[in-house]
Length: 526
Image 1 (cartoon, rainbow, N blue to C red):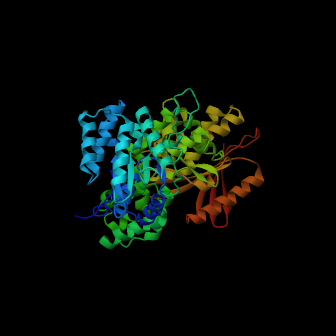
Image 2: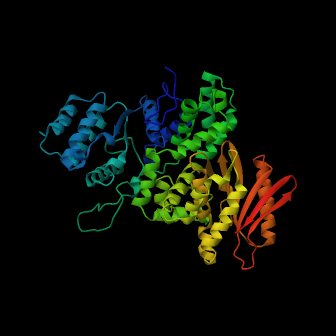
Image 3: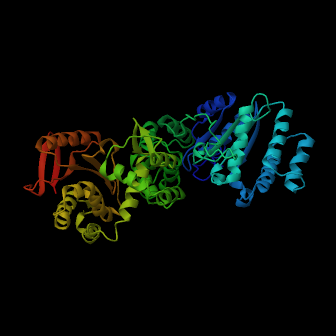
């Protein structure tokens, strides 16, 4: 059976095209060899399970591996200590290949509820005896710990693991414990001491820092595509395609695989991309990204749900997206920590940035969608849509002209602070219905700041560069023209667009053309 790109569940080397995980697994094994207890804390669909399965296969040569998945344990299992002990004992028996008969009998007693005491203390005494009987060190791996992360029984379980960790090497215990999930288990708190001391401590403050990069590098992606190319010989430019995929995804594993899957299964052989060679191209990657952004997939649904569940995330994300305000990446600040934990942001030179360009566009669309019903600019874009499409081509100049006219009528009397904060969002509100269904847009990350933001508008295979900026005087504007001209060189284009929000009372609204070298700039003032 031919291999496929997988976006559902763990990847298997014999069935799926995968990046080479050897380096990551070797780095994690060094932590196991050092006897560390740690957490692999990453956002949803970030390849945690696939990595753990690859790790378990390597560890089995030197260790007894207990590989559990808390997602298979239902809510009843965490209802009380007795249920948890019984379920954990059953999972342990199912996972471990061999154990002394006496240990098996004691674990079965927990399952059958015939044990004298079904408690965590009793369970860990048996685990201690079992660990002491082994000829190889035991390692405990628990995936999907989020299934129990808000549960007191699980917190007590972590506290027991912590206690045995601190007693090593005098007491037999797991050589290493690895917990994997979205939430950072280290931040969970409980009252460890029931004797009246009310200090709150983490039941997992023994965890070592996990520094292994889980996102895919351009080289990782290229390696996966080389395997694909050896099967199909498409003639793709692997270096260019892998760099493009990385540029859109910053190596987010699910997004990388989804782009490749769409190109391979949906675009190849279509009327637009009749051959695989046609699909594995710049146009193919752009089309795949456009389709992903329109998907209603579980990853996006989960992310957007977090914004509702954690209201403090919304203003942070809107500041980063629409206003380009630099926000320091301080992981001790709760909303920064939560935004990073759920995959919204990453640390770039100690500054918080949106994790990748696909998430960025999904968030833009989501925030803009909240304003559709009440936005007169969106309604104007819908009403005027047909006049902006000329012989199948998008007329950016006409879009700018109509936006300037409509925006000035609706918001010309608003104060500067209001306009500066909302101008970009309102332009995207106007643009969205015009390109909806056919086109797409993305924001160039290196130009997004409080002064400037470049939008790449994709429509019917064509690209247009439009710079949104705040007017800061003629000298600043001339520098902006030079920057845009240089940026057009990067895209191998001769025409670009600039829309400036000018708050001078004596400004002259409208459109003008500026020639810089061999570039034509269409500039609008609103």
